[in-house]
Image (spheres, rainbow, N blue to C red):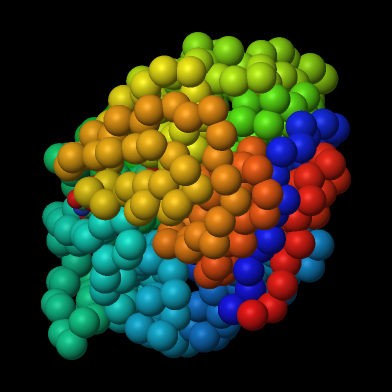
Length: 417
Ligand code: EPZ
């Protein structure tokens, strides 16, 4: 398994180009199932998860081609309505094929995604919504067996905003008979990007980005060309990197408006953030100030930036209190940061991060995608060499990370172990 070896202590400077958003690209690829024809999606990042989603569609009989950040998907000849365990266990977001498959074909057999390192990750709200729209849902040997002659519009309410739940049910509703209203919907920019693509396909959707989305079903959708929005979590990760290395990084191709809650908190740490043409310039100080955060559904502080922010706070002046409200086990990076000399304790969903002057390079283990990003952030500051093991977690969500870091003056190399 690959490791990443990082020699810390350098102030990173230069320009980095943000890739397309993983969490927008995945639902957009799944949405191609809704049309019978060739969809072209640009700015699709070259990630493991994208390859897995491509394998999933190919396994269903679709044609999936990927080259140079462009995915071309033709779902004309889908003839297998199954998302097998072998693929779903690689990537939970595979559950996103459920809604479009039932909407277009009236049937689907999708392996239950199961939990992951950061939590149980149930999909009860996805299934509740599909049942309310008239789908018959059975669970059999770890698979969801779903069927429906044609889905009916329904009034749905989420106890808690779920991103892929909102996306799954929006895709189920676009071909349903009648109107569907989703209350307490997720408001993430990736939900808006998907809604825009569906509208280009001919769907009738109002309110995406707000907490109430209305979908009026149509009979058919047509294939489109679409460009994925930039990855706001990658953007935030490079902001944290500028902060922790005292660097000066121009982050190009990002949409600052998608990160307001994070930007406010990063500015409180002393990070300079100024808009430049087609991006933002992030200027780090010698040492960040301690700032408290609490994650929340969008537009609150993004849970996907909690681990990276904690790495930044591990060298802050003062103590920062970090509360994770979305996932029940998203502090797996704490023990690894402590191996590097961080002084952190946590009880339940709240961590106290007492900033230290120095971090020291060490052998550390990536446990999940954003935890691995947090270890990269910390390693770029740490004295000496850090070896990050199980770096395949990072490869799920960050395109060409070591290339981008080295172009900013970092000393990062990948080794096969
Ligand atoms: C999406 O996951 C993202 N993944 C996650 O990014 C992100 O952390 C998460 O949203 C929250 O922002 C993709 O978009 C592919 P949720 P998702 O459903 O949709 C509970 C990354 O690092 N819930 O919004 O799976 C759930 O337990 C990944 O890129 C239910 O109870 O998250 C959680 O507490 C990690 N029942 C909360 O809702 C359900 O049916 C939010 O989960 C669904 C969710």
